[in-house]
Image 1: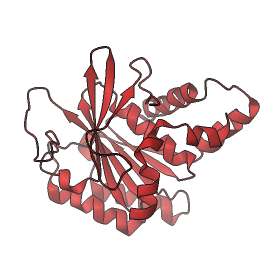
Image 2 (image 1 turned 45 degrees about the horizontal axis):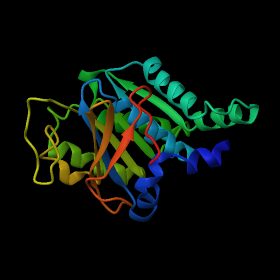
Image 3 (image 1 turned 135 degrees about the horizontal axis):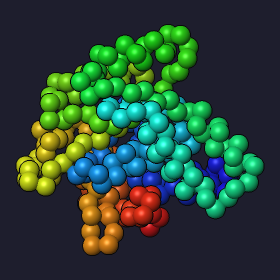
Length: 235
């Protein structure tokens, strides 16, 4: 299989995200779903895609420990490389994982300012300088438009290409933005370039593209997830 095949066979290619990032610069993405439906699995696949392209990723896990987050990467990468167990693939896996760092916060202790302070420590000591940031567990119920706007400004200051967030939706909250983005992100959807929504459907799970500015697909497109692995399936 090899690293090149992992890159080219990744179903995320259909979105053209990597081209958007190269041409449009910094942007923010969002993965939404009800609790327990696989937001972290999608974020990890997005992170691995960036890592395969050679970008360093910082995965910020809010309210979860390092071991649990690391297990997501180990499990999903094992599934992606299951067809090839060669020594060269093991070398590739090792190289890929060198592009990832995990940072954890307690739910009550996270803020953009604290994240920037810890990231500055890493960069100034020449330990780690990411270009893609994953923020899993951000509280959109408590967050404000101004607070998320600060993340966009933070991206520019730190030279980040993308920040991806996860958000928990609730079945009984029917609020939506004019563009169809559900609560709790209906009042901040203008800040996001890409919004995906995980939706169970009969015996399958859809990954609906609600918004994708300058992507290769239009809003309304759906990808299919394997319910047993949560891997994005090729069309």
